[in-house]
Length: 83
Image (cartoon, rainbow, N blue to C red; front, side, top):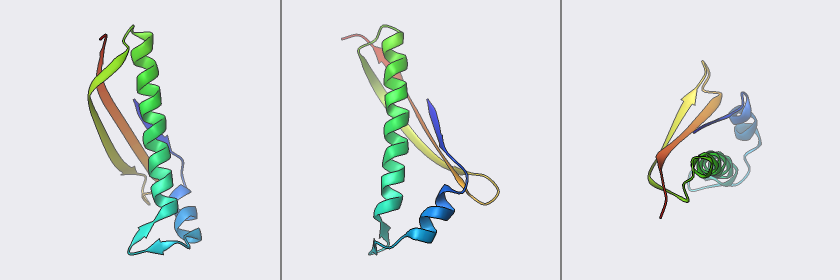
C-alpha cells in the first residue's frame, strides 16, 4: 500500500520547526510516523478483505517525490496470512 503526503508539507514543516534538538525534529518525525501508520493501516485492511488475520514479511520504504522534494511517499508491502 502506498501513502503520499501532500505537496508543500515539508516546506510548511521546515518553516515552522521550533523543536530541533541534536538535528532531530519532533514535527518531522510525527509526519513520518503518521504516514507510516496510515500506510500500515491500509495494508492491514486489505489483508482483512482477503481473509487474512495477520501480515508477515512487512517491508516499509520511504521516498521523496516532486521536483522540490515536496512530497513523501511511504510504501508498505507484506503477505496476508491466516494464523
